[in-house]
Length: 225
Ligand SMILES: [Zn+2]
Image (tube, rainbow, N blue to C red; front, top):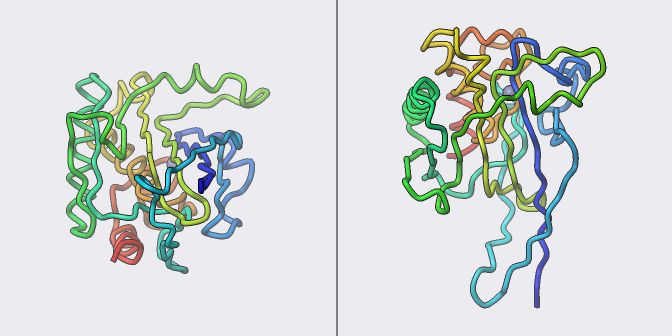
């Protein structure tokens, strides 16, 4: 017997001038809203062979009313492997710093791997302005980063996350700010959604002014403990 799992692809982005998030007024959406600034509903069918790789179909618990909103997805395990695909020294430093900061919460352990195949999260770079030219009319996007997540909508389990930083947009920013943008993107890769502007959270999508906050740490504890 074969089971078919639907893996949804969501693209979550952050920017100084953000894109569709603002147009949608995402702050009014329920915290577990899946489609938040998803680019489109491109989907992939996966089949699993019962004998060798049937995943556990147990639904993962997702808490409600966390200080920082959630996407409604998470990793099944607490040890998460990340692979550095970007070769940009500034972005590498930002991702390394962000991994350290998330590990300081002491709930999940993000570990660097040299094996891209084994990685859960890919840390990479892309010119996001070029990539988004067709998304709006008369809309200037200035995105700093973006995270794509692949997950099973039935079990809420994350399979893969790709966090992207834009080297051009971040070139003239300082080291601390780049780390905060990377912390924001890895926040998405762990299952966090955008927080409203008035919250004290690294997940506020525009004008990032802070790294991981007490609220964000509490949210990760609720999500993974
Ligand atoms: Zn974001």
